[in-house]
Image (spheres, helix red, strand yellow):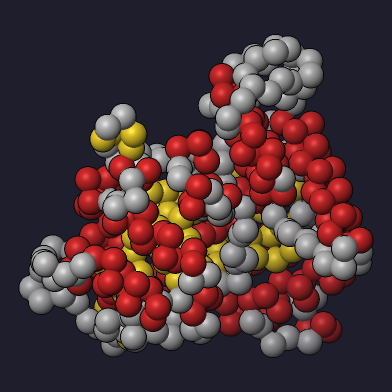
Length: 437
């Protein structure tokens, strides 16, 4: 049964789609992943094949590159033509109420509603993920696999495309017949290992934007140092950046990446128990004052993401110090408003998102669209107020005051206020929608 359909435009993204297909096809059962370049016979009516295939599918992976709209014909892009196969695929998926996961490649952005036919007006408001063809390809594919497993109701890591090798590492068991298997063996094994790495990282519901440079710096620090603390004021984005780094580094830690949220703790004495539970150590509270419970972790190569340490700073610092002393292969990424103040700690400060272009009264939003603070603001508002996003893509919007958007925290707080209003309105209608991260 073909449960995963990949939709794309050949002139736009054929190369990276081939890589995506190969990875998904190896991971899931034979025949589960459908890509039209391999499956539609010449001479067949593509509309019939698309309809028949999507009726079996449960999810569509929509790959969008910078040329996804298609070249101009008669003064309009191909997506505007009723006979466009890509348009037919998405229209059919929408009609069947299938889950559509937009995947942005090669730096592409979601299309504007004004560039799409009326039948595809829902598309720009679907939350998109990114798959980069460079060094981030592996973690991005790992995340896509996890998302698809969640949609299909498959337990993570249980699909047929991976088995456990003789040394306990997950390896690919089914590859295409002689198609560069030897050349790609190392990457394939690494991707398979990452896809079955134990973790408790949440699947985030919003896009990661504006902090790509911070993320690169954080990953580099974690590869060179055993303890990195991400510091900054409340609401600046420490938690989100740390979780994003955890996803990216899954392949580097075969024994797992584990998130421990300390914000709910009021008693510092519970910090050790919280960490032990997350790491799967069956220790009683009374046994956690010493170091014996750490012995079971001594040989493990894992990453501990310790979030919101500032209100239990001394307790968190003490546990991390003991952990790193007893477990030489462990690394710790902490987030806090201040340093843990222990030996070997490397600090990385997260500053407010910058604004590259100054906003003045009467300026169109698209003239500052490259500012990270503006991107974050518009992305979050688009999630809770699609009508705002649609309108701002088609006409001029003004910003009250030249420095209003220049403060990223103000933009984030405004998003929180708007979301509170949205959820409050939803609650009054009998349905409350909440979102984390």
